[in-house]
Image (cartoon, rainbow, N blue to C red):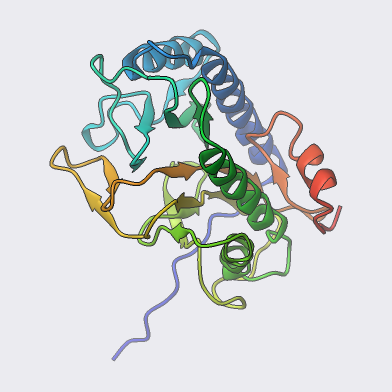
Length: 273
């Protein structure tokens, strides 16, 4: 019997990381544009068209469009939709909704991938807190992505923070991933689990980290469209994501406009930088 090998993790040169930074900046700026465009009355297809135009006008190619037949430039997941929502003209945002916008772009063959969950108008304090917890858990995961750590140290950091904040459903079966010359690469990064497992992180490795957190249970269901994943109890969900590179000086967040400096400083999270 042969021993199963762990999947190799793509390691980039410094020059290749810079190309990924260009893709990441395009994704980050596209998401800022979409965040500013979210309002009651706009459809998810309207947002999709804004995203595609911006990516193409700035020299990029949408990563998601045509991916295994996906029809959008963004994944637009509203309320109980967790991830992979298909942009639609009849999906119109209303005051009090939340929308997860997941976006990817390719620049010179290299990928960037990130997501934000945005409130539509006024949302409840409970939903505001859900967004805060989910986004902050992402940054705890990113801060654990230092050279010499193990892959699941990031998973454990995400779960530990969420568990410390109350009773939330941490989505299983979906998570972060390697990224580089393809959008989805080995390895999978769960948003839960024990630390100290998986590959040792090395400078030049790049990952997309993306916690998905529900107000209710962690249970999910994929709809008949073959894409949209929803909460089984109908309660709302939040999703945040960034692409980052492992460096000798700590995690470099390629899809954050400031590479993550403000968040790391605000939370006092330890990195090697």
